Length: 71
Image (tube, helix red, strand yellow):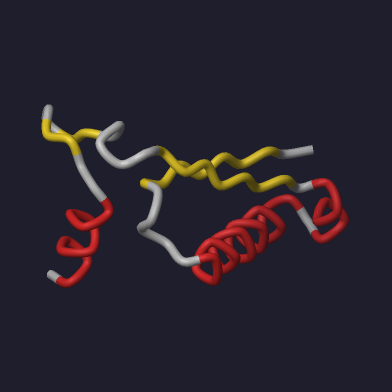
């Protein structure tokens, strides 16, 4: 039974977006391992507090990620 962990910064994704992540990642796993595994494929979304995630030594917040997404 596969277990997929997704880590995101808290307050970046809405509940609906997290649901889409779970759905699409599950579908991706099933496309590889077969439909029979759907019922035992686990996907977990872990939200990391803002400021506890960094790139290149710079702490990130949800606002930083929203700015990045806008281009």
